[in-house]
Image 1 (cartoon, rainbow, N blue to C red):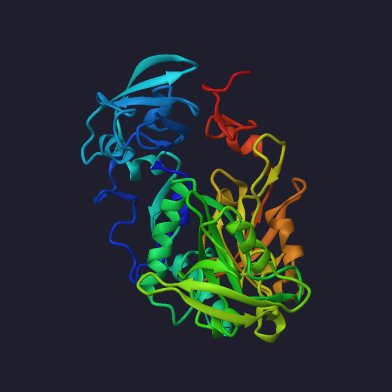
Image 2 (image 1 turned 30 degrees about the vertical axis):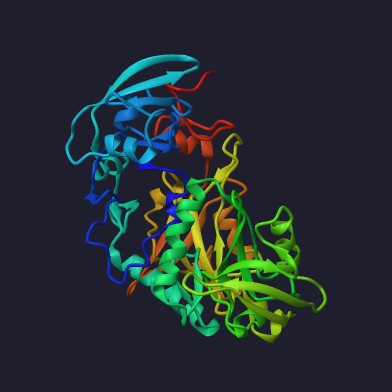
Length: 434
């Protein structure tokens, strides 16, 4: 595992065909040799270790979250750009890495023999498929069923999915615009520029522009990350990837620019006339003006009220320091058809042990058919409150299978990979102070 924060945000569903390289790929190297560290780096600064891969070379060498990498193979992190350092860490052959580590003000040298990305996941009983760690039993058709589910869910709204459940766009937006936004989102997060998101819709049938925007700072920038078909903004030609340069008379790059954007794009309980300056990558700024409309007038009220997406994502991120009960199950739920599908399985977790796979479609839960259950009912599967067994009837292709999950405490699940929960996240026992 080699990454910078939120690399998973990229996804790989932009590819028209399944990737030739299922493992992570860096600098054109498919399935490279890596030390097994999650890192955050900036130009001319020490590289911070955020985590280590369970049973990986870095963990075995005693590297811990919180360590600072000062140099790699003699290349100083404080005198080089981050990309130059990455070229030393990522390799096409298993040459040992000489790392200079700082911990608690003291420096020492560590020698790490890297392994392929595929070997890292194999050490935890998994493999890569579409660049995602999955159970050995997972097949590509599970991802294909998930793709089809998301296509079917978005179609009635005129929306097309490009990014797992993260990115939805009107079908008439050029794919190169979407690819640009996906790629740039990674850069924005690496540069710590993200200041927030203003969703298109509120908690009810409120007045809305129909556009969700991403706020960036240093410098200020506002990018449209969703524009709902038929909405006021959409009718004025606003599309995903457009940038907002001005709201009313306030320039976005001014000190009060981002706050002005928040106020204008926030859904409200009354109609408003909005004036915007909008520009696309290859065109000049144009001025548009429109009135907000009730979400029900263009179908926005049927979207998930929290995420403004046509599908709900039911999952749980447990408090890392708490004694949380977990199932490890993530579900996609379409409230219009009462369909639910497995979108992700945490590791380690009871769901992983149960044999559930991505793409499994739920038929019943604890003996109750899906059409009798709501999203709130299904949250008992993704947010368990006790060790009470959860039984599933699932459809996997043409087969119907019965499976059982027995929720566990987070600490119990982590113990399997030599870790325990702390306030800063799961910690290898060898690195945690008692």
